[in-house]
Picture 1 (cartoon, rainbow, N blue to C red):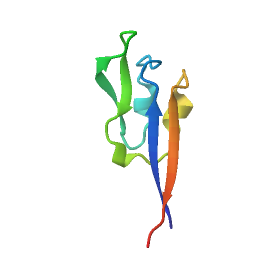
Picture 2 (cartoon, one colour):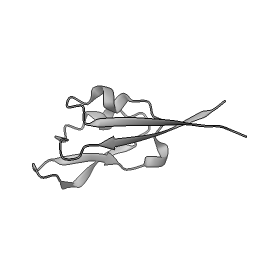
Picture 3 (cartoon, rainbow, N blue to C red):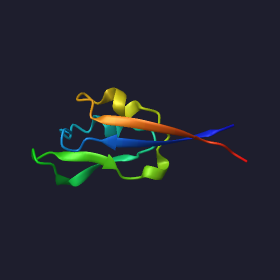
Length: 77
């Protein structure tokens, strides 16, 4: 069975740091940055990119739609 590898891209300038995506991630991939964006918000980022399964929970719950999810099937040999 093929495994799915995921990756997310977060528009850090539009992220308001609500942290809803952090709680929605089943694999604890997302964390809040110590740095702030130009609006003064701590933004979300991929803290553990190798753990992402591409489930899209983060993008679904994001109130501002700043998260894009990519998926790639990994074929087992």
